[in-house]
Image (cartoon, rainbow over all chains, first blue to last red; front, top):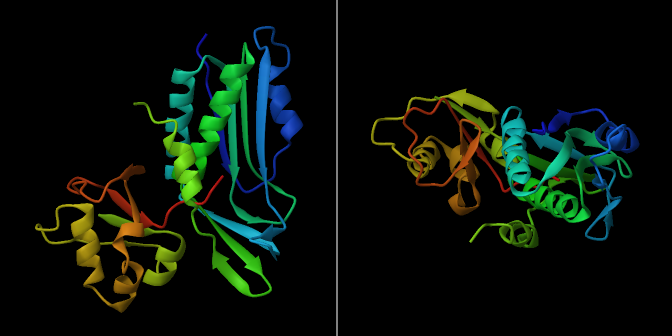
Length: 155
Length: 83
């Protein structure tokens, strides 16, 4: 059975439990569900922040995440895949991103979720700006995120 | 072709998108950065460190040597910080 990924780019919050249930409820072929949810921290580099604002590139965000979803489904035997990425203003404690992978056995679900998150960090066209008492500033990309994505590159 | 700017590139250029018609000798993404930079201080400031600028043609990432002919939409932005 071919798997269709659910990909949503949205301003609204999402319900993690509901998304997990949507992938696995009533199915007997799924033996493993891995969930990664990225949550807005209340501090950045030790400084408290009031909120993050995520800017994104509409159209390309869906296309780029879709390409990585396709690659994940070709590399691992997934039974289900959901990716949700929010944009707009997000307060500490709120959800930012969700990856849910379902497979027959755990290894595929773990690896695919990690692969997708590493690529979302470095390749999905989203940019975070932080708000703090000092004003607003763009968060800089981190080299270790590039390193994390590079380890999935096929030799 | 349509050119879009995001995050601090957008702020520095001072607009989110525009339509441009570069001369024929502007062949690659890198050429386009050079040509845009010559259009004024705001562009020169946005593209002052071309190595940190990322580009996409028609919603797909491209390298600086990518040829721009036939592109409908080219975007410039800083390294991504989503996820």
